[in-house]
Length: 408
Image (cartoon, rainbow, N blue to C red):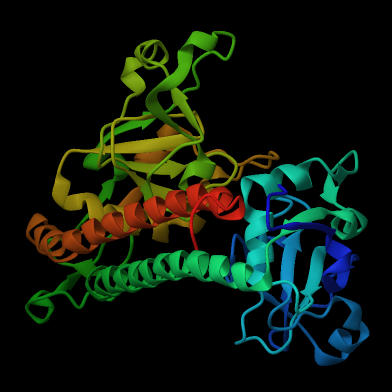
């Protein structure tokens, strides 16, 4: 890591504070409002993830002053994805946390530069080499204090941080745009298909159905009426020739948080894909996780195969794609109930999944919705690809910036 113009130092020598977040039972401490309380899942590279954030009462926060965070502090994950780091933004005057490494950089150290160090390949490898524990490995605060880093001047750190934060802001802008587009598509979906305030609704009378009163002309259909349902399968791990770079192999983690499946952690070789060719699903199919974590829904963008935890719908009509995607997302609780068997892991098998009944509007209304919302889904896909490209570019830049291979 060291190079000309950089000095080697231990992290404890350029930080005002390196401590650890609260460790102990918390379930009975959370409140509906109060001081935001961060956990590992709230820390992503360079950014706070605020979904499902918890709160603690101010008096308990006062007792946990050691683990309090302030703007400009760096929070580092200890367990799960150790080393993942982000800077606490100015909009949070004060927070608290559980089981995180909390770092307050000195004036010699740019907080964003430090977060970039941790998030770099070098940082992740360094943290991985200092994990302790048997049942669950974690990044010890003592290892953080003794971590040796090579630092350029503060001015160089600031320039590097500026470059990286520009990439981060571009990605955040795209994420904000995606969120707006998703909400636009969902608000129309709710208006038309949940509240029944679709175009011309005042001329359509309500009739009875197994699902309660519905507009005349609407039907209650099983999922299998939308197309072929394919349950995935994992090719034999005993045959290494079945795995390679030819076809994406989708598992539930590849779907989390993604409307579209842009990349997968594993791929199959042509031989692996050909060994179970009937399991190949085309672009535009809807994947639904049905074992373990049930009810995650994503769209494919290319031919792929999935493991056995996923049921996929290969649509007969393109006009049903956006409607069925959002309908299946809304049915997460119903899917979870279907998969509840009293066993440790829930399971919605193919038979249960494809026979599940949902309320379906007539084709002319689906066509209207598809024309209106389809372009928004396409824009979300383009923005998602842009984020992926920016992320890859930033990751390629990180080591070169640190090594001085790019003029700043």
